[in-house]
Image (cartoon, rainbow, N blue to C red):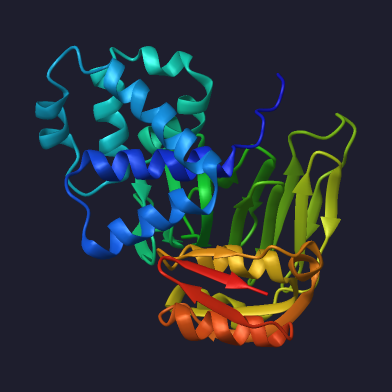
Length: 314
């Protein structure tokens, strides 16, 4: 089976705006952020209008009633409204499928700036970072969680009759051999960080003879199509993100700002490729994204230019 292509971040964001517009009028802040996002790049407006046309083409039945019934709160409900309004034909459209189907599939999802702690049916705890989504399946053979987007922290419940607890992404899987670990899904790979006991990581897009890696406490691995790559140690304080504390160690500025971007409606731009590659270390609060942005930029000897709905790091 061939691996799915990485989702286009512009189309993903355009899809979120289409879904948000489908729930009703934007707030003043949301409208400012939406206008700023469109103004940032002509491709943003084109992507939004393209997906809006798909929405409009499905309006031959009364999609307004579907939106009122299904679009209250959860983003996957909005996606379901779009799909139902189109008689599921949207599944055949690749860009829309990449954006909306993950939301439709999700059992639990979070929005911008939202961190949610969820008790699963087996007693395990999943904490979702902002802009994240999971699908859960549990049966007699095992416990399976698909991380559809974003990041999640898992505290695995022990059971009298052991059943495997596995978290999967398009890149691979992490099977818990103990309790606490993180899985983070990015555009170019998946990162697994272990905070207690052990986790077995496997790669689904690698050559068939690629061996799994068993990680102990404090170990981290990045999984992509080229293999499983050891990363800097997972520090205990990094678990603080579940309470709003973001810890970065020797992290590319672009990656750190991508994490922070889940917690703000402002668009964060870093025009310089050199700046995006700069590695930084520091601790900031996701509950105060403006101050966090200033501190992360300063760690790279950069400054922040603030425009309506946009933050430019130079």
